[in-house]
Length: 214
Image (cartoon, rainbow, N blue to C red; front, side, top):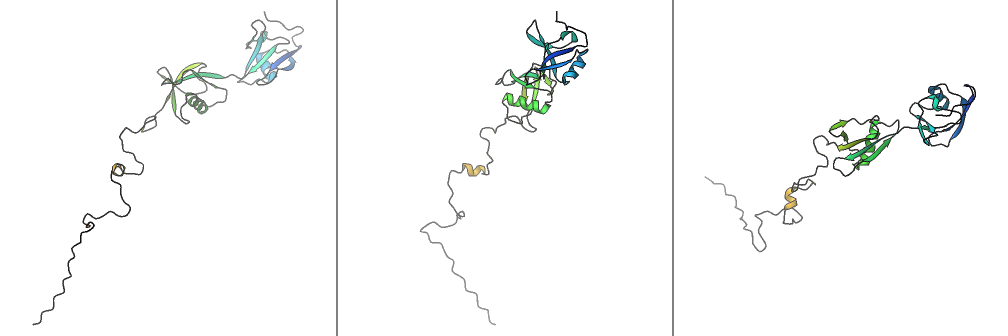
């Protein structure tokens, strides 16, 4: 049975409250009549959880009713986080946790999944729950185990490489790559050009004919 507050219902209570990333502080306020009144008095946001120290279990549990509270109780304000476990379809990564907090967007979550799986930055992925596609959002059920599959870009495939023996387009033609004879500098030689030691035949000029006189 939970301890009960001593004194009249409107007595002041001393509550030890620990806010996120802070040391516990003492808050004195009127005995709350409802959980909404308590959350307003302690300035607990809607996306935060209010936990109460359980004297029997020695741990903190969610505050669900006012009867769990009493004078001198220890409370903790927690920021809920969501966590999933991702793996790669090729099996290189298995069960790696990805965690986010309220306010994270779908693009941020996708980027965290891509990084956790070791994909290149900016890789578009799809999440699968077995054979069912899962929309990437901040409301994915907690502790889900999902598989990340990279999506192929339009007109291509993921990690596509040139086939062995395919011509390379590095600004050099295929003939130039496989030409076994090194080329000399300067313009190409004419096939009719005489080789060394051979005199070229020279046709003597033909004198013009004299005009005929009648």
